[in-house]
Amino acid sequence: MIQSELLHQQLSFSQLPLRQELIKSIASLNYENMTPIQMQSLPIILKNEDIIAQAKTGSGKTAAFGLSLLNNLKISFFAVQGLVLCPTRELAEQVSQAIRRLACLMPNIKIINLSGGIPMKPQQDSLRHGAHIIVGTPGRVLKHLKSATLDLTQVKTLVLDEADRMLDMGFFDDITSILSASPKQRQTLFFSATYPEEIKQLSKQFMMNPKEVVVGTPYDEIDIEQRFYEVTKHTHKFSLLKSLLLHYQPVSTLIFCNTKQQTTDVTDQLIHEGFSAIALNGDMEQVDRDLAVLRFANQSCSILVATDVAARGLDIKELSAVINFDLAFDHDVHIHRIGRTGRAGNKGLALSITTPADAQRICAIEDNLSCPIIWGNTNEFEHSHATRLVPEMVTLCLALGKKDKIRPGDILGALTKDAGLAGNTIGKINITAMRSYVAIHRSHVDKAYQYLQNGKLKGRKVSVRKIS
Ligand code: AMP
Image (cartoon, rainbow, N blue to C red; front, side, top):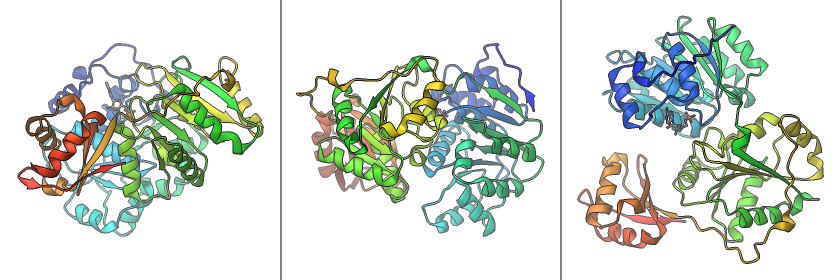
């Protein structure tokens, strides 16, 4: 493998050989400067070379490969020219949305999401009409290949996103089969937070002289305040968790548990204690998982309790704290977890609850830190009168969606112009096939609810409910 030369010169997006539509959509997304991973990888990728990029979630890696995929497309040729494999359905959904946003000024680009957990039939119907880019999870993509509903023979660019996580999840054989089903003459891009042996093996087999790009350390220690707390028994963990939440009062908290059952138990106890919490694990139906992520991201729920697998790739901005209810088994996973807080220049907070049984894992974490672990002391907490944090927003669900040709602007217009709400009281608007979700500031939610219940949206009566 050739080590890439680091590109030190400050390039701007407009200096790259990108289509004008892409330069304009980058400007409309307010991406002023390239992130380090974009700066280092885009010039190489746009020369059509293979790359292994060590980049974590939050680094801007999706735009790096998304721009390359879109730039390479022959729009008039209605065949699958780009394929992105992701470890989870949530990440696949986020990646397809991110690529759609970048493609917003390129008319007639079709991007299909092929993830598991939903029926094959609508995906097959959609594939029958052709697509330019497929984003999906390895299991489902392979299923389509085997049932001959997906043709990869025209693929020009193939991306493995969070490659190390996919391999951790046991997708090695599926990935190998998919790579073998695409043409030898193609560009292959691996994005991965770590660089385990299996990735080296895959790259040897499937890549052509890949350039390696590494951007700094996986996370910036100085941007994250890490504190460890110990309890003597596992059964004391919940009471410590409660104390941490009351003391630190994080606006949004991602709590990690090592088992699906634990995520449900912790969530139930938190709700019972009056906290706003929701679980995210692989046993939940896909619609419930999507709704959990949506409510956490739109700030109408302040705590998300997840397993590593379920939380993989979540792109949640302004995550105030990560709490390890259970310490990760592996140091890399620990780093990946805590790297989710403290993004975009904000200082993050990572709290870990430990028991004496975690001694070995704590040593492994400490070995990789530049300074000794800081142990917190709950005796210093003064929160006897502390109240549970109430989320700023409330989600309203409307029984109209993309199928009814509803767009975010329709909902925004109805609430600001017709219902008279100020724009800053309205948060994220998410529209799915059948439903729309809008986050409204808690103090204005009743007004919005009443208007929507009695008024009309695009000339139609709409059924609305509050989600809590
Ligand atoms: P990712 O690592 O791909 O999940 O991206 C993390 C976040 O960074 C996403 O919300 C992107 O919209 C955002 N982002 C990507 N590229 C840029 C850029 N050049 N400037 C500002 N934000 C960016």
